[in-house]
Image 1 (cartoon, rainbow, N blue to C red):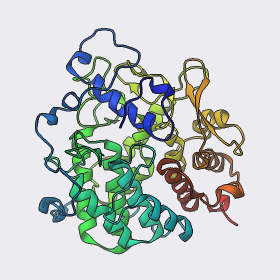
Image 2 (cartoon, one colour):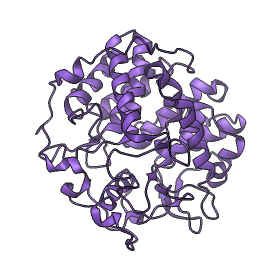
Image 3 (cartoon, rainbow, N blue to C red):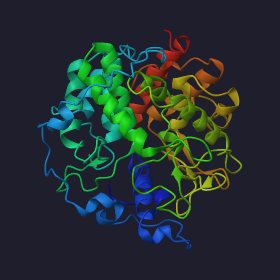
Image 4 (cartoon, helix red, strand yellow):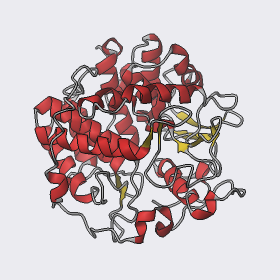
Amino acid sequence: MRPPRTPCRSRLGGTLRRAGWALALAAASPAAAQPTPQPAAPQPASPQQTSPQMAQPAPQQTETSTVPPATALPGLPRSETPARTDSGPSLANTLDDDAAWRAYRARFITEQGRIVDTANGMISHSEGQGYGMLIAVAAGDRAAFERIWGWTRANLMVRSDELLAWRWAPDHRPAVADMNNATDGDILVAWALTEAAEAWGEPSYRTAARRIAVEFGRKTILFKDPHGPLLLPAVSGFSARERADGPLINLSYWVFPAFQRLPIVAPEYDWASLIRSGLDFLRQSRFGPSSLPTEWISAKDSLRPADGFPPLFSYNAIRVPLYLAWAGVGRPEDYTPFKTLWGGIERERLPIVDTRDGQPVEWLSEVGYTAIPALTACAADGTPFPESLRTVQENQNYYPMTLHLLALIAARMRYPSCVKS
């Protein structure tokens, strides 16, 4: 990723969305842990500063299809923790749009199974691999799912634990320059594997899902935090030990529908409490006149925008109502700030908002983004999707087209009347 000079003015299409991640890791350097003033927009640190694991070189140099044995043949779940099957609707075969899936597969999935972020330097990341796996299950395409999962195992499961390195860059050597994870990517991959296991009866998917879920549960969920169960965005860089304003949270990492399904593979964790805490955090994060959450939030005391980051409602945070609606959780008033911001669902573009004054600072203009307001209106009051959003336009970048497909899948799973022809 090319770091922007001024994050809130960076080129649209993915750079700003992932820039927040780089900024978070930069702020996690030892200097940031001291109680000294931080600049308004710190520059991303060098790879050696971003994660403790980076003292060691990444194990792979180029794209590979060889699967590490430890992740290819995971152990079985313990017999004393049987799977639960009462965890909400199944994802399998809910896309119901073969043309959209074929277009997505042709545009963003390589023959090896790498999901390409077309507006972000053609990189791949654990989030994208997870989304691709989820959409493949929704499309009923097991061959594509296995291809994506195989590439993910071979190229991102290169840490010393069961989690995924968050970023793979085709023009870098090593391609994985930062061994830190991204917890939302781990959640998405574990959820996708759970859905694949349920759909196709494949025990190895269930076992792999369990191993990832147990690992991020152990390393990134703080069940005893005073605020309630808290989800760290990564193993390194966001805790109270590493930041003066830590722990930091990002509400778009609360993938509520995943937490409803992960009890199938990891029932020992109280996933329902994580859903409750996410809703509580959202209600405490109505910042400024717009009552919107920022991307990065300090949970040190009362919730507030994190130090050293532009206080924006932006690329990450637009996924909050997506996950709320997909899981069918929350109260009507939880959707109100998003509905107020987006107004009518016919809006052609979405604003990035400075929460200090509630004013737009930039716009998301690709049509796929507008599927999120459509889903929000559907979940809040049953408003049907506009006809123009019931099919997916092909000439989009990775992120907006992915969000469009996910919104349609969520609507078909939870609110089918909103998308009936």
